[in-house]
Image (spheres, rainbow, N blue to C red):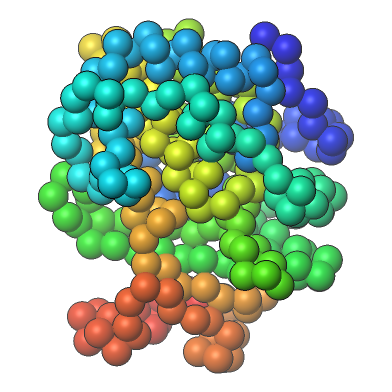
Length: 285
């Protein structure tokens, strides 16, 4: 398969092996593998994904959509609901002018950010993007155990434009979808994707749905149990659930006293959260 061209120097990324990228994940303690995802797609990639989805014979419940919403829990979805068509799939991965402009800035600064180490990587990336004039924030999601979904927390960077459009930025996204003993089809799907993802929540939602379905199909083909952190319900809570957004350059633990003013909570009330867990405010900003 032809490689997807990337504008930044590949030498920057050559120094980062699969283990290093896997450690960027703060969503679980489990190891992950290589690659990433973007908001753009080549004809080769669309053909690969289309053929991979078709190879599941429509049995993968993780690709089900009802009433335009992504199901948060694992449910059996049959018939035409269980198939993501080629047009919809390619639509998830297509880029836009806004996403391309943000990606150019990310590719410009990410090499220097990575070179400073993995600890605090996402916060430093957010800070550099703000220095480049983007309204970037560090988003922190945290959730309790619910059904088959274990409790967890996760950090990611977003950028909000003047028109209100919101884009999620992930470097090393494939570490969030890495699995052991992947099939050839799944490995090819990961390897075809470049290192930087910039896309709307809707495009990432579609991408995550497809990747979770593909991961489940791959692991089932190997006779392996699918861990909860590789299922769509877990991904839903990481990127699309309630989150707190901060623009602080340093965390509260590092002495940033202005966190309460710099952060905003999205999706749930600070008072309710504090009553449930008084230690929340002592966590990282």
